[in-house]
Length: 112
Length: 116
Image 1 (tube, rainbow over the protein chains, first blue to last red):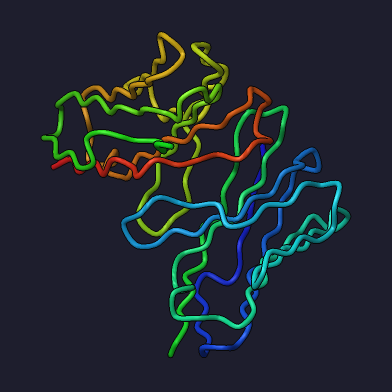
Image 2 (image 1 turned 180 degrees about the vertical axis):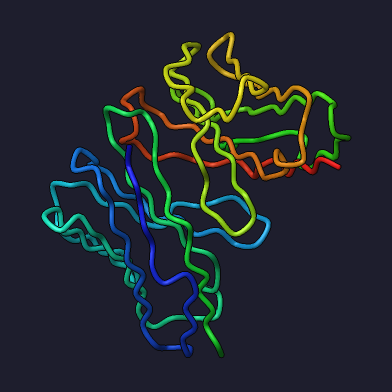
């Protein structure tokens, strides 16, 4: 089955700096890669996603890149703000498997 | 519109008790997923429904876990004879389309189950 690895597990940056979180996946059939933000005690919320037919997608301060050959994708947050502090999860979805496999999460702390 | 809702939000059970967790998906969403999230980890897939059909239950950890969605909307996850290792947050998610795994999943707030 699919295996998703996420790094780093914790990340601390100064307000205004950039943050990068990386994920690798194992199943070449996976074709949909969402990123979720989860604040303490709250539900995961989708912040950006990318499908395998594109290599990059951007939404204001957030961008995601995908390298299908290497089977890895990354989340980039620029001009970080304290409210960006949360746990971020990547996931890989295989349309034939009927489920998403999640990484173990990255705890991002943005220091004011 | 209303998002995915789950009840109860918190459940404390004594070891050996049965529990039932409810999920109300977004109206009209075809697909419904259950996940188990242990502390400090990502959601782990349990089972998946397309309408009332349970298409994948490969993630259910044991035969004590049972899920149903009889009318293709509300779903219930039942855990029989709860064990301490069942303690976790149980997340439900729904997506609009029936296409497996390629549509945005919207999560509920979860049910935090604590087994004493």
